[in-house]
Image (cartoon, rainbow, N blue to C red; front, side, top):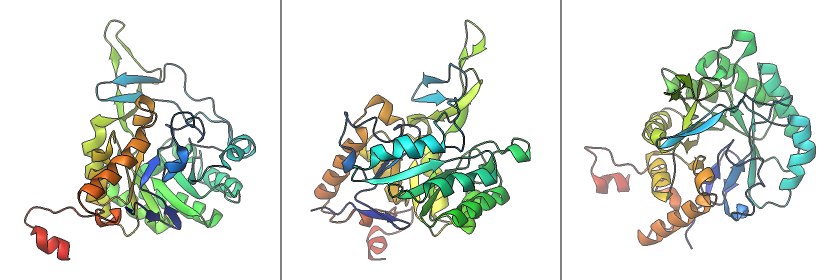
Amino acid sequence: MIDLSVKIGSLQLKNPVITASGTFGYGVEYKEYLEIDRLGAIVTKTVTLKPREGNPMPRSLETPCGMLNSIGLANVGVDRFIKEKLPELDELDTAVIVNVAGSTIEEYGEVVERVQHHPRVDGIEVNISCPNVKRGGIAFGTDPEITEQVISCVRKATDKTIIVKLTPNVTDITEIALAAVRGGADCLSLINTLIGMSVDIEKRAPMLARIVGGLSGPAIRPIALAKVYEVVKRVNVPVLGIGGIMNWRDALEFLIVGATAVQVGTLNFVQPDGAVRIIDGLEQFCRRERIDDIKDLIGSLVEPGVNQSSHKEG
């Protein structure tokens, strides 16, 4: 048997493949397309204190090698989420991580306080790419000081594993990563989407109602991989790699540069059982390479100038 298990914070996952927030609904919408219990974990779509309708249409579109979206965190709000959505996850045999967001630091703490006692919630992922109403619209995740304040507030509200989702739309992502760890993060997930836009050349108009949106998919994978590589060298907590992972080879790249696990996002829209196929591919690779434990692959990158045999001995 190949040991695919990994640990992030206090969570022991059966394998390193997780579905990303915003691409897998609240957790059960895909049950007709794949065996959800085979996943290492699922991350719910973002939950906020009050319900949100999201941004006006059109708010998503396909682009070369990816997609743009400007959904606006549409969700039912934390109260309905607890009452209607979490009970549907009771029978799942996989970890459930709830993605949360807020308009203020205090809202982050309140949302977490409300969900953290539910027995089906195994971990919290904090989305810090949202506008901070009290600070003139600046995104939480672009300011190290605010990032630390948000995560400190969340840390006081829960004893569960805290994952902080980082935006790449900053000058130095490692500074934000370090601030999140100082605030009490157990794990970091990166990257969130890059800012992008598309134009209808006949109408001379933006394709999205909000003009710009988040770019995801294979187009951003090399950027995501580089950011993960940068961050794992600076922090002492596990990192989850996200960004354009479309097959097991893509996932393996992130593990080799140091990610403990990966999140699969855009792939869920084009191949609903893609995450399970990635699990199968990782297991088959380990078997071919005679690797008994996938953790032996994590951080196994051999950089130029480093002798392969001495690297393995170290």
